[in-house]
Image (cartoon, rainbow, N blue to C red; front, side):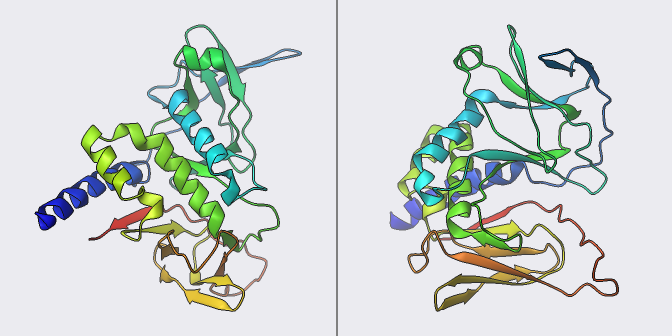
Length: 275
């Protein structure tokens, strides 16, 4: 009976992992779609209706990520809620990308920062009208991902509490995508962000990751590094390290000109479960 229960839990966890990684699978190249803009003194309208098969997300689902950020804000008390659009391939550019919150009755342009990050406003009317977040690009060109970045954290560091909060946001966004039984079984484990049964491989910002070290005071733990994907792997449930622990990312030396920029990492998140 115990083995049967564990097997059911494993199957349900795998189902969730499939959802978790769905937005991170590599896809075939897609061409960019031109946009039309119209400016006046107070508003900017972005025309996306001409984009074939435009990428979009449910505003209601994304707001659940904001709710999770507020619920677990203590993990990163100095951070503000954000999301980020990450190109999936080197040829995909953020230049000219526009985001709007759209329903049958209204539309609102959402500013996107140069790095692809944005914040979501709370709009009761848009929520009631089941509005969608839409970009003027085809599907599978970008990954939509929660972004939590506490101030004073260096570019070659990640704060453990920030990663834990990002995980909670993602789980909240995709929770309802699971079948009822799977949802409850995964929740019985404490959720994917609160179990040692799940490990996550986070892509570093750049290629060439050499080492990743989890550090807090005198405690140091070397994390598993995939040099091909330039990622580091850990379980977010680790009582030995608090939210203020830092992951130090050490890159290989750049041959030749030290000023030469590193290559961006376009790999996605990888999730593994085991029982």
